[in-house]
Image 1 (tube, rainbow, N blue to C red):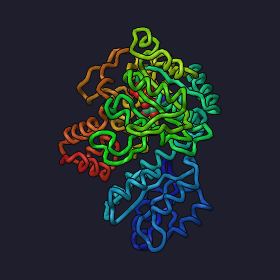
Image 2: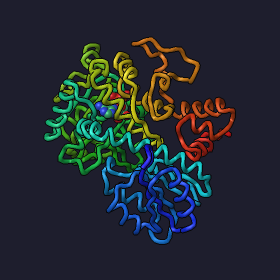
Image 3: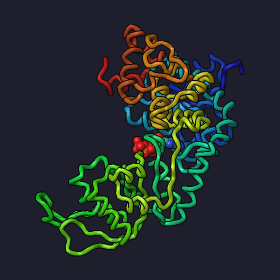
Image 4: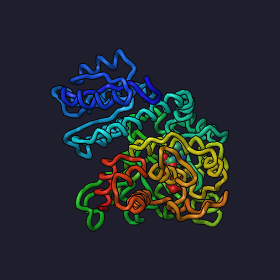
Length: 457
Ligand SMILES: Nc1ncnc2c1ncn2[C@@H]1O[C@H](COP(=O)(O)OP(=O)(O)OP(=O)(O)O)[C@@H](O)[C@H]1O
Ligand SMILES: [Mg+2]
């Protein structure tokens, strides 16, 4: 087989199509296997190593999407062929579903043979890369299994160790740390490893709910308790009975509610608004805050007793700048997470970029890094994340100085950036969609999807 060629499996119920596409692909030097339906395709896949699977969606019997689903469920990612879906009735939904399941791209019939050849080239390039990376990826997989908490710095090891230990108990936990450090994720990790994991974790964001509503949100109310209370309402504590409640942004709670919460923690009971009797609850409380509660106690804005009741098992999540060894792992993790969402494939992050990421102080912590990597995936060209990828707007921004990366602060609105990127790509391509798609490394179909999503033309 000539260099760059691969083994392809073409699945289509129409013999005419198999013949014409097969021929075009063979001319390029590829070995082309054929199947007329999903059953035949299964047989081939079971006996042959296939680099790229090109599968029609609508066929008599099982569909292409069914086959993609089967492969996704049964074959580890590193052992799967690259998948391209063909369909005569492309809806964004079925194509996106296929891509969510790991398909690389899709082609809407009728398409130019040229288009197929280009997409197959790309698929083979991906396939070669993923073979080389298989070992590396497996190794990293091991780092990602702490219930979503990525990181192997000493500090994160300690956070993970505590989370695991406290998960075995029903003790109250206070999770502290700067904004975006992963406090909520820690709370979820605790619940996920606890005996109550089969029940939902009930979350209340104390900062997001106006104080007048927060009380009834937490404890519920009976009909007629106040104007507008037209029926009985269960509060979050009642919902969390037998499970875990996460009181997020606890530092914003008013003194009145602090007192009521203290009572729940002491007596394990509360009264819904307007109720005559109190109600027992068995609930594990996890509180989280980015404020310095000790300081608040000192100045009298947080009740001391409540602080001690909450601070039974403290878990402090360190800021990202104090665990920079986690940055490459986290960056890689977010790239993979957002690859799935966007259907793009990223082969790597430039080493120089990683060094800069490690040097940046990350005031928004992990959330800021995630936003940045999400944007990088969208902006990447040829599957690579380079310094240019991270500059906010192609050709405009000056190179950021190490340690400041001022452009990163713009990363908060990914959708806006996505839209802007597409607009600029179209601009640079002089309005030619094919070229714009190529610039962005996405298919023309994906571009059409984004164009309609953002109402661009
Ligand atoms: N160790 C980690 N591994 C993987 N993802 C992480 C990690 N830490 C944080 N994240 C991700 O970063 C984002 C912010 O995390 P989270 O919401 O838990 O932060 P937070 O400390 O609660 O922030 P805030 O103080 O603003 O409420 C989330 O998308 C979360 O999934
Ligand atoms: Mg939070």
